[in-house]
Image (cartoon, rainbow, N blue to C red; front, side):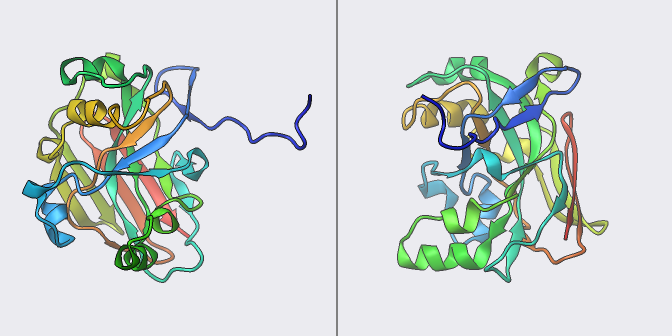
Length: 228
């Protein structure tokens, strides 16, 4: 049997210091995982367990670069995030061994059609129309945990046209990386190649064509995106 038409190519993220690529299986995203961001979105972070939505592997904008302003929206927002890359899978992974499943980390952006997401929220509908559109997941190269460890703290920020818009620290994550991996593995069978966008600090806001976004996470690196 042959394919009716050529299958889509495997999406893969570059790995710093290596000729190998990280093949992507799924992309999970954690919602409202910084207390200050939960508050700015009108929620009480002390009352919520973690929740998740997904993007598609072909939503990745590898290495950043040019982000085409998407159709059907006039309110596209930036969300700077720590990206967690898994090289081992499983179900019901214990918290104390969850980091053994993490290959490395990257700097990412969860670009969001906020107006479409808002409409979906009001109607109790899924978020994919606001989250899982083309180029909505800019992502830098993956830095192996073997080289940097598992960062539990460190500045995470985003500048737009040289002005600071988001500022936080990884130690402000409500659900830490190990807890997130463990909880998520109780909902899905995690696989090697899964990426987890771990949430964003406060300061999310709109972008317009021509904006230059520069994101940074201490110990991991930088990501540059231009809205076109």
